[in-house]
Image 1 (cartoon, rainbow, N blue to C red):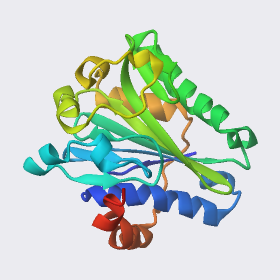
Image 2 (cartoon, helix red, strand yellow):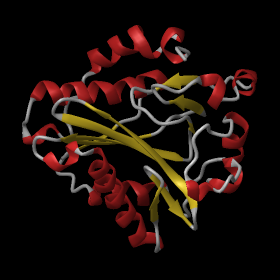
Image 3 (cartoon, rainbow, N blue to C red):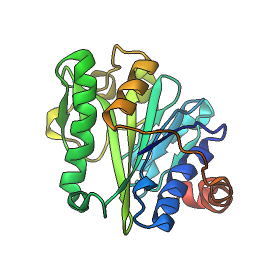
Length: 241
């Protein structure tokens, strides 16, 4: 697995890059070097909705518009998240020909979540994997995750909160239409938590946990540009539901 430590200046470009990395891995076939761990962040607060999310059901659009927080749509499922400075994002492209057990989505969730869980636990003690794909500390969520499956690879990406303004989550997101049992009806500001760790600690822990070997030398810049122009910058995509 190769490391790509890359945050793009355009929010839409960051989402497009995840999809472009999945496409590039598919084009490479079953090559063992097609797996990638990308570590990145948004340089401004942003709401990212899931591929099938209904914006009006999950996002306080009036508030977002009033403070110029963009609302974008990703290529994977799941519900909406608010991200920005103080939130480290990761994106994994995993080869399911080399790891055939990950074609079972439950096992894919288990593999990624347990790997991150163990990595963070070495720094903080007990971390739990709860719900479909949440990671919690002290029974509060610090990581939300989602995936997209292609023929020979899957994209698994998510968030790691370490210094994020939790009140912004409360202001930008509505109570989600689907909630895991462990949430017990808690509001966002009572449910979400920052890890007491630094960004560098999290980056190192992730790189070690997924055993990266070297850096990805080239990334699909032209395809990112195409995806931004055709989809990720378009209201027709971002507000399709």
